[in-house]
Length: 210
Image (cartoon, rainbow, N blue to C red):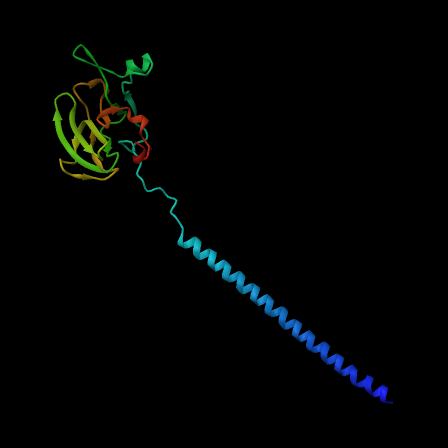
């Protein structure tokens, strides 16, 4: 009888211990999962904050040199004279005036009458004049290295000392006495470090690469 009573008392105790262990295990597991979630969330938040704080803009704000016109239908009427070019290209870059052939130091763009002429970069107008051979001329200094010259203009919208923004209309195409056969056009020169260069080699280039 004593043995049976002992067994009957042990069974409830065992059930109680199992129940306690089950509840405890469930609590521990839940606590571990919660801690894991919190750590994961904390880690995610830390990474996000770091990325945000150290984010560097990928858009390059350095300006690029644009063409001196917006009209995509314009074309080259007279090339820049390049000493390294082939003979045909050099012949197309010669200007004939009063029985004299002259090497073109710029490019003549045309194909339409009185098209808008725009500034290739921000800068300051350093000269506006009328030349009996080249027509109205506007010269803009963009920085210590770059100067642009717009010739054969029928009219100008700027004066010496004006601050110009890239893309601003500075005048209209026109004619010149030195190239009457070209009709309405823009004779454009680009000067880099004091030397005239072929503008076609510099369009779309970053200013800090010139």
